[in-house]
Amino acid sequence: MKVTRGYRGEGVRPYPVATIGNFDGHHIGHRALLRAVSQTAHKAGGTALALTFDPHPVKILAPHVDLRFLTGPEEKLVRFQEAGIDEVVFLEFSRTFAMLSPEGFAEQVLSQGLGLKELFVGQHFAFGHKRAGKIADLVALGERYGFAVHPMDPVAASGGVVSSTRIRQLIQAGDVAHAALLLGRQYAMTGVVAPGAQRGQELGWRTANLPVPPDRVAPADGVYATVAVWNQRRCDSVAYIGTRPTFGAGERLLEVHLFDDAPDLYGHQMAVEFVDLVRLDRQFSGADALSRQIARDVESVRTMLQKHREVSGK
Image (cartoon, rainbow, N blue to C red):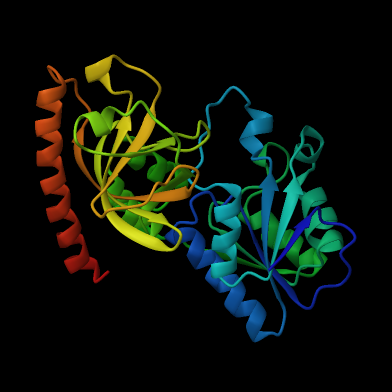
């Protein structure tokens, strides 16, 4: 898969078919758009394009907003490739770029810059300065500049439209099982295992400790049934995310106890897939009470993961 920055100077692409968006989370709605692009382009012997923005427009237009992401840059590229996209075009989003009128965007970027033949977008897609351009405008501009526009209906699941905002809210509330239905996979956080305060080992529950990235959506503080992945190995696990209030609130960490014996994992990159919430965080009277609760949590997690496999077939 090719990665391009900017929309100028790449020459003529065979029958370019595209979609546009931020694609944070690569949820099942995003995948429907990308699948339509890939199938249409490849049927015509053309190029499947995904147009996205760097940085995220909110970072430029509303820098005070604490926007956290569902996917990091590397994972996003992996997801594009899995969806059959041939080329990802990063459009540099700046205040100057944001001033482009809807017609200027269609003419300069979509037509002259990329030479699009077909464009797939969601029904509520808006573009140009202050998002002034709507679907009807895009269809008319496509007719003028030689590309067909295909508005797609939103994907609905679990009683509502699938969106990155909805998924963020579910994860931040701890409802990772519901979020997984909209993502089409378990939500995961990735980091490098680092030394901790050895609290888990002192309690009889050795843990791998990962920092919580400040720019990523994190589940609500609590205990979760998880699967840890490193070096292509998968291991059932129980994870705690929080500030350890029983010992005095500190840095927010992700602590993972693996059910199988594992080597020294310091310095290894690990992904933690969140399957379901066991309980929200709370303060205990002391280390003994916490250790007893962890034992109960572990048994709950074993049951949850077994049921998850029976239902999902994984």
